Image (cartoon, rainbow, N blue to C red; front, side, top):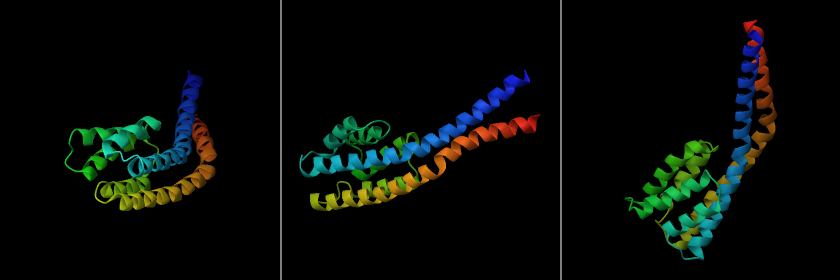
Length: 170
């Protein structure tokens, strides 16, 4: 019976380590997807002449979940007549963020970007989109460095923590 408990402890701790490593791996990938989404958003606004709800709906179909939820919820809030565009954007961020691997720094960049949505003419809006993309580029580089530095360590520490718990319980 004690062997079964030891196997359960090692399995649970190893799984926890792999989940932490998965978040580290997903973050740069989702940042890349977010930058692509913003580029598409820029193209829809500048060249496609699409209104915000339509542009958001198109983008939500182009990018994978969970980031597609951000643009889907944003389009839905706008369609329902949310009081302001920035308010609809911040509500969408709050609903979507727990499902992403992104951190507070990226959330702040996206929140600040959302406060400018629908407030300026096209050229100014394009500048705000590009500024957000520059900030996300910086965060992506940092996320890649963090992934390279800590991914293997998280996996190993999960397993080793399981072994440590087993030794302590013996």
